[in-house]
Length: 609
Image (cartoon, rainbow, N blue to C red; front, side, top):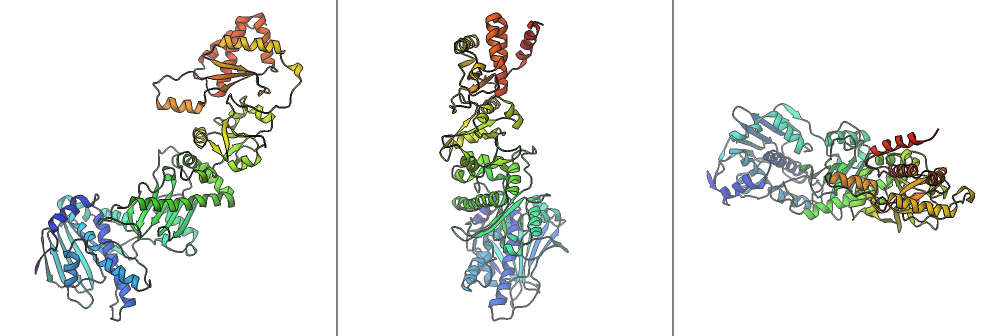
């Protein structure tokens, strides 16, 4: 018998085929989801109906014919009567599953809501790749029927010879979509979208490997080995995860989440910027393997799954209507994840140290850029300190708890490594006064400190800043220093010799203990910032660094410079320029060291034996 669609199906089909889905492979996901729905209905009927339901294996069978370009899928679920065929397949976007879910709720939740998708539109996705579709179906105790449509405004229903309960869909593929009659292609699609369908899926005689959606199970029912195996499958990884967070939430949204921390950070290995590997599922069916706007950028190292039946999908189920809800899902998971890291840092410091060594750069990035979560992320920062051995890290809370009562700043030093920082002249003033200094090794560290600004009302200050006022250190014997009159004269000579372009001010504030000179930052632009600006715009000339030159009047080098100035001023100028470049080199501000070598040779040549 021939029927006309209740909607102007040709127009709607054009929308489905050309606009509703961007990936044609989605039709496989939709048909498997519908087959899963139909199978679940049989399971429910056995528990809730007084009628006898025939036993039979609930499975999904896929069959391909690459010569005839045919894709078919068969389930052994509830099947459809003639009225249901007309209702479910004759009206676009009619949902038999929707009515079933309502019945399921009325049963007081005796069966899990394991149904997915809107049957009408999901089914019609097959017309994206087919020029003819046939549906063979038989309901419990009903007659076997064949539904057929070529994608126009008519469809036919007639009796057929199908013996088993269930539904079989045969898609006659368009020539350009012959790939969907390839076993390798279908196997790939099933693994991507339908790996967690509860019912076994067969491709011919081969049972495709599906997996349990362990994120929906209780934590107590899952072993560490199962968590690790799932991570390797979900993240396509070979390593074991460093840690994971598994939880369920009912408010403000319903979700199940399983978030992994990998054991290695590929960005550290030079593989370029990674993408967040947390996939979004709706009742075990993949919706988006890498959803945008789920997490802030710094969470891109995470892997795992978020599954929520609250996600409102458009009629294609391919894209989310409510991006606000997606952000809400992300916020719930993110807050829980940050709390999980804080608990790890408190209860298992060794594991947290491993995490921070590999992924601390992401926490630093979040501390600088994620204003909403900055307060909690700042607590997770870790740095080496002048008070602790190489490799041992402290938190900002640790640092603040040890600050002297009069100390108003959090002091930090930047350098490539600990040896570089400790060999520079800046640290000795703080060591002499017993003031703790944090060591920044990453280029992002001063950037983070600048964006945070203050922590617990304590300002971040670099120890090479020229504006630092330190309390008096233990005073050495005054007879070791230049006389005040000589010192004043020497400072004036240094300033006039080097000029305003090189030196903003010459100081003798007493911060140096052993070193003769130090270049103090006078413009707030750190060496790391200069390097960043140069990388961003390599063709633009960089202005000369503005420094204040600190001299140590107790240093034999400075006392000898004063003597040399009086006896051989031209040689004294060479020595001064060398000391100035030495200071810039220690500060990381010397951009062209070539002149140093020539000057040093000239100095050596003029030294009298």
